[in-house]
Image (tube, rainbow, N blue to C red; front, side, top):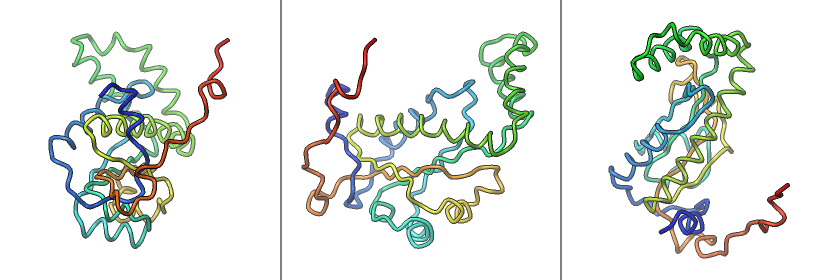
Length: 208
């Protein structure tokens, strides 16, 4: 299908049937996440993939009682770095230099811009990095639709409980969103065949 046809096909699936998504399709979605554009190219987030059924059950019980948590094939937790530090900035500069075959010293100006983010407090850093996870979330949803995998973005969960379950706090990470991946349960999802509801382009988009 074309991209627009694919976007018309996808919807935030409310009930999933538990069927496993093939590994090659999961890998395609994860590669798309890896290619996500982010501020400064820093990729100040992690995507944690959860397939373990017992762990999904624990997340459902303690952090998010939405049926897709248990009915999904995989969950992807998008977690943002809480506080970007000088080492992360230096590592990023070195990665650019190594990848492009240029001296790290030639990126001094770029490094100076990163220093402005490093100097901010943790709360401001986390707001900034959290926004980057939404770019990755959007890319992942489109990538999932491209390989005909249903996906449900979830914000309605207890972040502190989820962080504890999967050990994020000690990694300088905080959960921001969850993406449930699987296949729609046509028999139990009343929205599976419902028309997609969107504002008209005329009311949503202005050209000036």
